[in-house]
Length: 177
Ligand SMILES: Cc1cc2nc3c(=O)[nH]c(=O)nc-3n(C[C@H](O)[C@H](O)[C@H](O)COP(=O)(O)O)c2cc1C
Image (cartoon, rainbow, N blue to C red):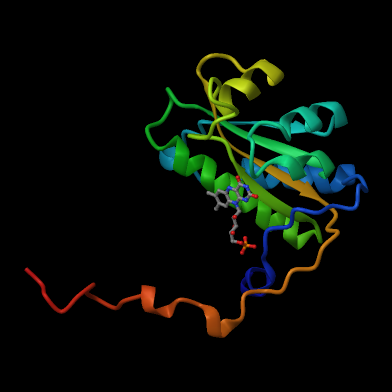
């Protein structure tokens, strides 16, 4: 796992090759094995491979989503927010786990933030997606994970660049109440 994480980078360029059915099944398994608070599993996922739909979803935001058009898959990570007060955490865990399993399968991926993001001045990114996917009212969207065969090589973060200063032991500062 640490070897995988040492290689992990967001990948936004894809070859256009399809993701095999077997790989898709493993990705879905990763989503469904994600831990959730109180085991409520408030998440719901929409796996999109329809090219026309991917092109429309790639326009969910003005910035930071256009590359979805070239991806083989977009996994729309949603939740029934009425089921859990920590659905954001639950969705985030599923999002990062599916990205990690994608990496283990030689696939590239990138998180596209949807919650709290706008499509344009009048419409939220979520409302735009709701119309495209037919999401029921109680279903809210955290992210879309774009996945495909990588068409770019990104250098891993060098060990020397890790921000060890952000990690403290026992206390944050010497002044303790
Ligand atoms: C919560 C979250 C939201 C993100 N949203 C976007 C996004 O909307 N569009 C995008 O291109 N990248 C997005 N990213 C990817 C980050 O930009 C990327 O992880 C960061 O720049 C570090 O680069 P790396 O993943 O290659 O190490 C997001 C990542 C996270 C964790």
